Image 1 (tube, rainbow, N blue to C red):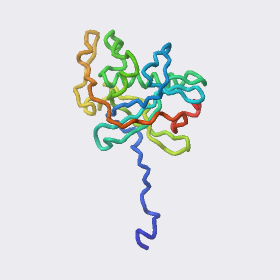
Image 2: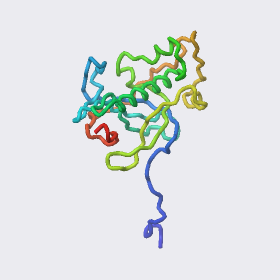
Image 3: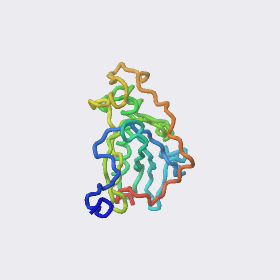
Image 4: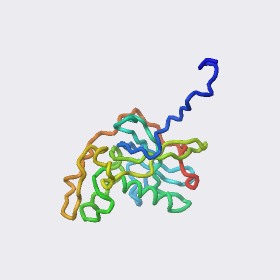
Length: 207
């Protein structure tokens, strides 16, 4: 039989970036229009699901390398009525993103490093570029999907090569002026749709 009669040897097209891949990405937050000033959630960036879970609907675009322009959709947890786990995971991811984008070692507790881990609002995260470790999770249908759960900081041996900068050695005397500037504009998009509260990829305990 020919190749167009027998498809047993055809390659499966999962179209997934391999688990563990490190890639420079740019975050675009797809606005959900939910604000709670008491929590610091302003600017309409947050999304509130039908069950009360609140999150940032993240669209991560790979900016360089063999997977350039590929998009990965991951929710960054802000609040879940089922407990603090999703909040803690979301805060941990944002801390890693800031460390990665601003060239800060996760172990650096200097005043300058602590200042670099603070933001004035979610607008500071919209368009941020950092190095992500690509993971594989499952969507609501049980199918595999790429997602981002952690960022790579200057402590990693491949950080400088991927970020395209010399490694930054922060110390108590280091100033933030040495941190990489995050002036790259967010990837253009035309009227990105509002996040769907039932969007695939949300952890089961955040439903």
